[in-house]
Each structure stands twice: as structure tokens, then as C-alpha cells.
Picture 1 (cartoon, rainbow over the protein chains, first blue to last red):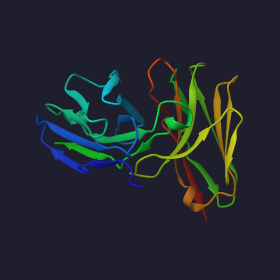
Picture 2: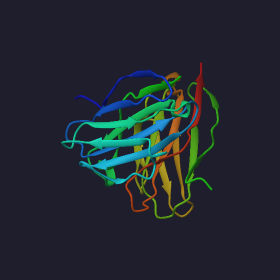
Picture 3: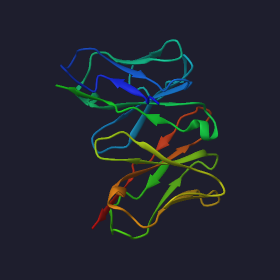
Picture 4: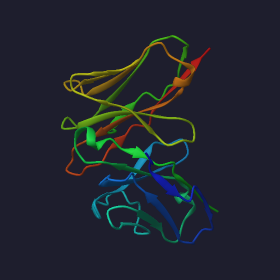
Amino acid sequence: GAGVSQSPSNKVTEKGKDVELRCDPISGHTALYWYRQSLGQGLEFLIYFQGNSAPDKSGLPSDRFSAERTGGSVSTLTIQRTQQEDSAVYLCASSFGLAGPTYEQYFGPGTRLTVT
Amino acid sequence: RKEVEQDPGPFNVPEGATVAFNCTYSNSASQSFFWYRQDCRKEPKLLMSVYSSGNEDGRFTAQLNRASQYISLLIRDSKLSDSATYLCVVNPNTGFQKLVFGTGTRLLVSP
């Protein structure tokens, strides 16, 4: 079946511009997660959604970052006034549930963001 | 102390070798443990969940030791295609359902 999809796959933007990254989770998965991975670094948790609500926004690096999810499906991560330190791969994952094996997260291919 | 710690490696092994990685976690209340693999410039892919009783999937065996707070992954009969970074992943069960990823252990299998 279809996996997690993300768009765009690559995004180059100028410092100060806003960007929107999109994630389409696996059909039927109720939980959706955003991470970012800088070059040579581990995954950094940003935010997760259970349905359309985001119980934990603690990972968002600053108030320039926001995310929403509508219809329990597609999610958008928005970065306003991008900075060079925002350059990273932004990964989205989804899981069927939040307990035991249902918590297994499946990742999309990521969006590589470069801020010049 | 990091929530999840792994030896970054690299572990260089010949084809056919057996190799083991350990990972330690700091929160004793942690639940849900996983191993993921990540190839260069690719997204992480779930390798296996780790169950309390230990579990095996083909050449891969995962163990959980709650008393010592570590997880292990054993790979038998290594293949060239096993070359990747292996990520240890833990749900620290801090009230929010998020996973904490280790920075990974790099494995290089050579002919």
C-alpha cells in the first residue's frame, strides 16, 4: 500500500522567506509526527498530532515554526522568516496508534530544506 | 545524560560475521522500544520492535534488559546490504507520546 508521502522533496529558499512542507500519512494512521535531521545529526522531534490536535508542541524550535493537521490526514509544517540554521531534512512519520506495536512509526522520504 | 545513547561506531565487519550493538536509555519508565535502520540520505525504516521477552526476525535478534536499561541488536551472518546506521528508539513515557531517537551506530560490512 501507499506509504507516507512528503512534498516537496527539495526546497531551496532565501533567508527570511516562509516555507510550507506537506505530509500525507498512511491511510488510517491516527498519529502523525514531524522530525528534523541536520547533516550528520540524529532525529530531533518537533511535534506530533493525535487526530487533528497537537498534545505536544515542545519540540518546536521557535515561534517561527507552526504545524496543523486537518481532517485527521494531511499535515502542513510552516516555517516563517526562515533562517540558515533551519536548513535540514524534515521528516514526517505516521503510526496507527500510540501504544505497543501500533506505535510503530513509518517515515516519509523527507523534505530537504536549504536556506540560502 | 542523553535519553538514549549509542556507540556511534563505525563497526567494520566482514561478510558472514556476527555483530552486536547496545543502546542504553535513561528513563526507567520507558516503554516501547524499536530498532530502525537508516541508509545514507534516506529516511529511517523500522527494522523491528523490541519486546520484553526478546524477539527474533531472521538474522536479527533484539533483546531488552529493563534492569540495566539497555537494548541490544544482534545481526548474524552479516550481508553487504546490512551496511547502514542503526537507530535505537525509545518511548520515554514522560506523559507525551513521542519517540526519542539515538544518534545511531554505523555498520560497515565488507567483502
